Length: 140
Image 1 (cartoon, rainbow, N blue to C red):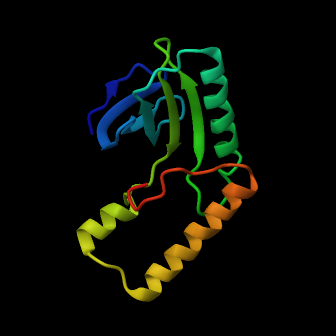
Image 2 (tube, helix red, strand yellow; image 1 turned 90 degrees about the vertical axis):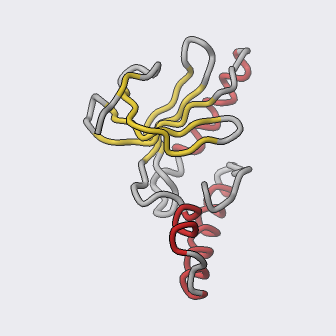
């Protein structure tokens, strides 16, 4: 796999994994430890110190959930010199639930139930920590 330098020090990008209205997620390599990660680059600019503090508070709250078995780990985060925030997340090589549904179609009822229970458990842990996930969907 070919990796390219990013604007984020210490990371090289291999490919785009997904793109939404406010961010692009890349498969990247964290150079310091040689592991593949998901690098989420926000397209919005954090123009004020208050915006940056709010972003870093949200990242810290999400990072505290990293030990939960149904929550993707947060490895790193920051703000680039141009004001765009980024997060470095655990890479899920199988893709998202949305990817799986697209490849294989509807899930059997028992599996859908089990996945739903795990998602609800993760959301309950997030809410108990004061984190509100505002974009729940199979692609996330």
